[in-house]
Length: 598
Image 1 (spheres, rainbow, N blue to C red):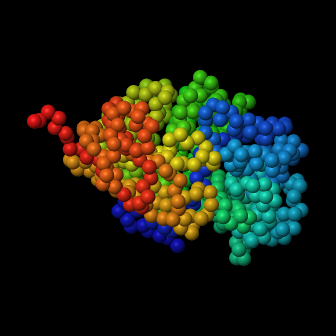
Image 2: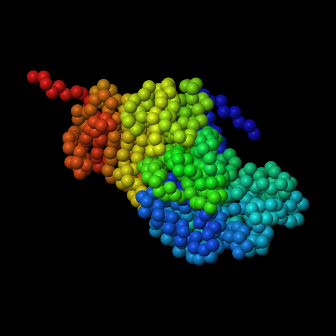
Image 3: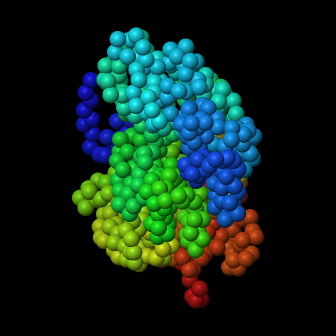
């Protein structure tokens, strides 16, 4: 069947395409944190578990947030060194249950690697054969054998109910029973050479060549079912290396094994942008490069500064020079890495709201400029600058040794350089000085960005304070999404949307706030940071009542409510506790006081 999408904009194409293929799954909130990973630890002779716990502790020691760890397949190695899925290596992980619990106490989820090819020497082979779990030979008289990582292997048939059930039974025993709720599906491209090998196709019986593309998608769907069957209210977090159209309904994806180079840090960007236009909003690349040598310091810093904007943020490595890529691998540069990752954590409420938008409209999280500015012909082929949501333009430094960055600002909006507050007209290229700390970001006029100050661990911290950065010169709105971030209660309506509608005139700025939903937000304290390039407010009111202005910043910091004008960045900061009303209004009066008339 062929579909034609006759719609006027790129946004419409993506929305209607995801009407057909499905919208991105709502992953747990903590999946937006930093996910540590490396093959190095799971290849140690012994005590891999302690190496990973030490990694988490070292992150904390260095002030680097971390909420998860992708566990590479070395945890399944047998005595012959080969990978045997679901088979814990007890020299490396002597007590998996305790290991998972230790990570949880530190606020870190574990996502173990599993692979659908099972070597013929696998210790559980007879059980899987008895479960009728594998792709069959063309004559259906035996199980197909093909080369896999480590030797000859059979392959799980995820189009077979027997195959799915047998696989999920072992997943439950080996992983889910230990408290694991996140699964990393790897090496699942199904490169079976004989296209006539037979799969069940849920009773239809088909050659593998006709169904190979959906095997990886079915693997992700199977994992979601296993987690749901084991604990129906746990929200799964699935990551897949491969997938067909619609994979976004079940899993986050990543771009496979990239190599350490400046070329890859740069071209990872259009890879993710293209995936977003293909309906896969929750996507990322291995930060720092998966294989090759360790990234040089400048490359590593720039890769992290770029990676923090990817929906999946994981530094992952299998370096070929006996090194392991860790945030602190270059002590003189650790502060740059730490600052970038902390910026990522401040943006978590923005990311989560964009993930909600992806789950309801299909919108990409990282967006090519053409997605937002289709009428500007100069952005049609721009591949390296991008929008994060509709409000923030990111123009990362992606080339070695740059001290000046050329940035094109699309026509259709004006732009604020967040590093210095300078306004620029859209439709021009500007030259921005950059150093190693620079992450060039530009706020769109009308932009609204919610942030979480001080967030260091999503699992163990409650986001009880929220800042909203607002550029008010154009009418705009933004919907903040909140739920418990962990369960499936949101599917029953237990979530909260807060719509911020901003309008402005010569007399002032009005922010109308409308809350809808049954979820009881944990946010108790708000700060609105409103850009005021020309005039400071004369007064600020909430629910029609004027609130106190502070001229002394220290007194403002200690107050629960009030406002302060920061002349350095020309922002008014309005601080207040959560009103009890579902709908309320914050009004900024910009009428200039006449201080000298009689």
